[in-house]
Image 1 (tube, rainbow, N blue to C red):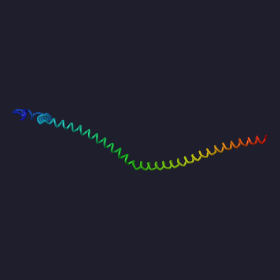
Image 2 (cartoon, one colour):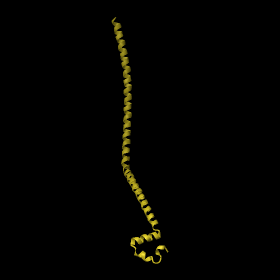
Image 3 (cartoon, rainbow, N blue to C red):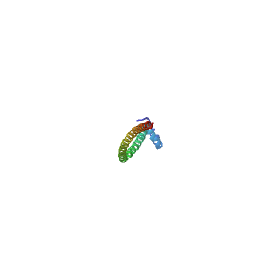
Image 4 (spheres, rainbow, N blue to C red):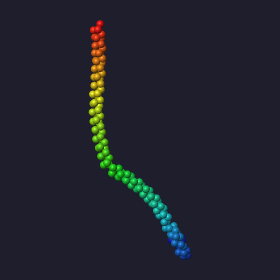
Length: 130
C-alpha cells in the first residue's frame, strides 16, 4: 500500500479538499502520464484538423476547376475552329500575295520592255529624221 495510506493518515486524506484528493490519487496512480498523453493527443488532433482543413480547401479548388472543365472545353473547340478559319484565310491571302508579286514582276519586265521599245523608237525616229 502506498505510504500516504499508512495507519492514522487515512483521516488526513479524507479531510482534504476534493481537488487535493484528486491530485494525491493522481500522483499515486501515475495519472500524470495520461495527462501528458492527453496533451500530445490534443496537439496532434489540432495538426490533423489543420491538415484536413487545408486538404478540404484544395478539394474545393479542384472541384471549382472541374466544374469549369466543360466551359473550358467548349472554349477550346471554339478557339480551334477560329484558328482553322484564320489559317485558311491566311493561306488564301498568302496565295493572293504571291499572285500580286508575280504580277508585279511581270509588270516590271513589261515596263523594262516598254522602256527598251520606247528608246528604240526614239532612236529610229531620230535616225529617220536625219
